[in-house]
Image (cartoon, rainbow, N blue to C red; front, side, top):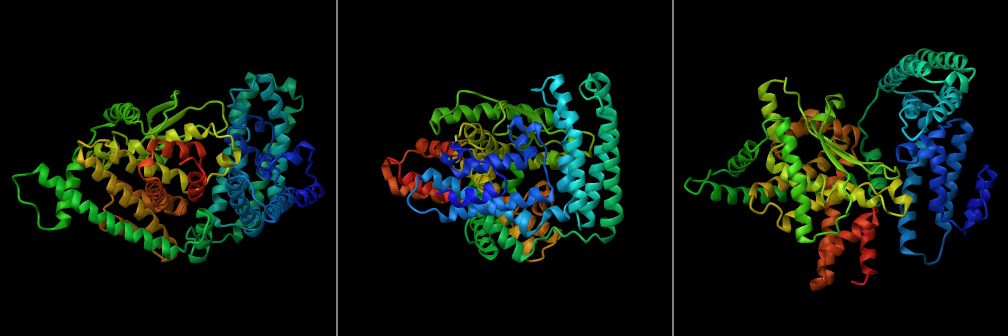
Length: 576
């Protein structure tokens, strides 16, 4: 089965033992991926990759392209029936290979991206110094050899770079200068506190050569590339967006079709919000006459939602810690899924050093292959030194009904739980190259499941917050298409998000930057959520009284982050 690809790979210098002949292509590919991307592999938890560094020489890049083409060709030549798990893995592998070929062959990023090199250089020494699993002598040996590898990568960049955008070139130059300062300060401090000169007898000469190489690269880029820099446009345009969308979701769906789906969702969810708001207002204010206008009814319900807000960061943290405990107890009580015995979660306020990310928070998930499984939820934060009204507006966006809903999304059974269970998945290809819409789609779907099972049923504003979030998800997908394909500017996106999709100002303000940085990921909340809802509906209809929610949830989590439409086959081949 592998004869064709093996012939090509051997001719390129890839070594295959008798054991490799028995291994699936996905496993072979993962090994070669780790060799080509040691820095990425290290960040994913492969500690042994700390000993290596990227080789972006022309020969290495040419071999990597040929390797990807050969594996893709071999996959396409395979015939006959194969195990479902293998089909699923190979689908993810094909998607990964296509993205590699786009980057290295089609776009030739190595010729136009200074940050491709500077981002590797930026962490090339700090990763070693911060590696707690290395002893002092091991660090000394790696740093000694690392200087030569860094200089080689700098030489690769000088040979490869031909062009670039002005903005990206400036970012790369700034990164190189910060790296130089790191060598001056941190490496010099390390030199004084260690015995590296004994381990690496020519350490001083290596350091001088490294500093000179960094300086030469900065001069080269400044003098020969930067004067011819082009304007950077983060707008993809219709053609590139369509191509990226197809690659991201794994099948044909045009930007216009996605926008149409999202707009329909916006309209239908707004209708649900109107009904829920009216029901809430009637219950909350039984002796008052309702506003005539639907918008005023919604505004009244949302105002109550936003008034139920934490007063400061300390109160917010305590509230979240209680929420995490309550959501876990709820899942156990309702027997919604199998709960792992271990708990590796901490909750902290996002540090100001995180910049704009501190205003929205994030889940810092343990890399899938690292021995330390700890996950930290960084809560949205704002300095108490800012204007009082700005703080009030901030906390009203992150109000308590919103948090009671979003704890399901972020932690249990959402991101924290899905990643904790995925770590045990035996298929490395699923953890390294996951299906894009899976993660946010799953967390979004979990909101609906928990609420339908009775989570916070005594507080109608929690369900209203969920609908508002569902509206926001559709808005993200819709504005992603509009911004990249229909020439919407930042003000267009902000106005539509506020006026039509009823976003809280805090979320509307941060939307544009996220649309520019991650246009495909911003579609995943809506599109992935829709896919999971359709799967759920299909299974309930197929099994009827035999449907078991716990089995449904457990199967998805244990299967890992695969293409959502592959679950139809998994469920159909199960005992159900």
